[in-house]
Image 1 (cartoon, rainbow, N blue to C red):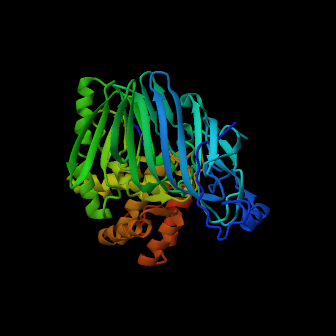
Image 2 (image 1 turned 60 degrees about the vertical axis):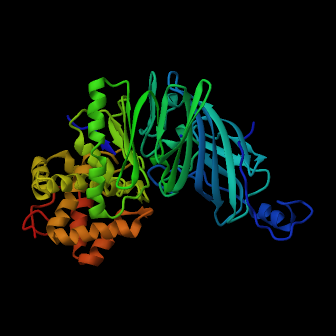
Length: 487
């Protein structure tokens, strides 16, 4: 994410593939195995694994694929739809389980059978299947729902669904899924996505991945998008309204850009000019961080002011910041590696995403004849005097309301710049590449990065990391802290 700084009676269809061996008189889901499963079944936790946002995510299963089919009316922000999830139960049979859903549920099925459901809170949907889901078994859940997402508020400060007359942007971090689909909203549970957004004919709906089809049916047009790579739920999104879409191919991959037609004609062309630099930036990043993680690329510029850009997988979202926002494009494309393919395991480590994307901005500037990383590091360091409140935040554990605060970005980036100064440019480049290679398509933690660096460069780095990420004061200007004597 990049902040502009100048200054989620019946549920829908679900199919559970159970392998029960010999079937008893109770049928496909009956017999001794079903009786045993029912006797030992548990209710999956409504809480997820993250201490910062415990209501996000749920226990007892992992989602492998989402099929979302929503109808959106950008003029009023009315939304109705259906999400079908393919999932796998954990080590315990499930008598019931939870999904994250801010919308009003209308119907639920589990493996095609109607299920009982309730809303114990504004964020949670509890589902009780007709028979328990066996431990370790694949199952399918379908949920039908409706609502006006922009009117729904979160218990946290991080609402991410934006609407203005004629245009909607379902973008947010750390939360967004439950505002427009039934989700297991935790970055640890990556899944593939098949997203269909239906909008009034003549309007456009853009999402990530590849555009599979555009089907006109009277007053409505269905835009279908597929993300074939497993991604975290907050990286799935859509924008709907009137957009100009341009398509091309670069480096053998499809590239699609979309810009809101609610911007002025001049702004539309300026936005496309910024987006057009995407292939060149990705080429440069691939040379340093390895293969681009997705099959498609591009970007979306919305007229909805969100105050941030977001690294949605394969096609980042940009709120219109102006024609000079080139480094924002670099920042969000860096996230395709740092945050997307290597996702956070826990939100306290947001510096892993934002510090790296900030550092990559500095690398880009240095590699293109502008200020060096060392000069940028020194300038940022000098701009925050020892008494500045900037140094008061523990970057490694900032708290849920501060995960996107300036020190997370800047001090995270400064630490990486100082680490390069301390260990050298080539070792730093190799370390960053090793980090991506080791955690590609998975997740990572700040501790894992520290351990990897120490294993490659020596245990003496523990004090360095502690000083930069844990201590609430300005690091001393020393060689040990990577602020002098760069190699």
